[in-house]
Image (cartoon, rainbow, N blue to C red; front, side):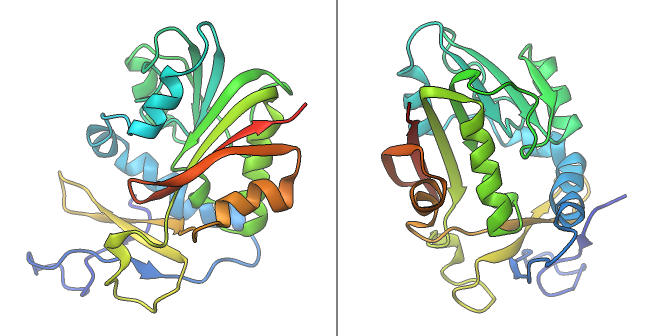
Length: 244
């Protein structure tokens, strides 16, 4: 069954010229896990195969980060999708995890290590990894508290002195400068149209303002130092070091 299936931005399924547009939404005040299950997890289950077809080229910042790691480093890719980053650097060992069983099936078919896991309750011991990456994942958590908890979990599994790289969608990206909802809205449904059927599925996103991700690391979490942060590919990113 399609999760959050819609027609298109004009509610006119017969119009081939119109494209589905992002929709501003109100975030939940309770049952956040069920909200994310319906508007994130179920959606990626449905679109996994098509989504994977579009995810094959590493982003330069992530590729540079991974290739700059010491040989033999152990890392985790939390929210690994189809595993496109797991084989970037053959001199490090990476374990992938994702909430979508269908995406993890693709990861395993590609010969990588992957498991189904919740980003707020990762099945790893404290201080287990030399590095952790989470690319385009944290923006799917529906409240500030849950986004903070997700980053805390990344830091929990990172050893002191280890590095964490996080990418999130930016509010300032050009594709949203002329969006069809009130400017400044940060919580949206972003549509994905299946190539095979034309069905459209809405995914929940929180669009991060400049400095918001940095603030989660420095102002709320503590125990970390931001090595660098920036804007790339319509995303904000942070590379942070877990302090001793």
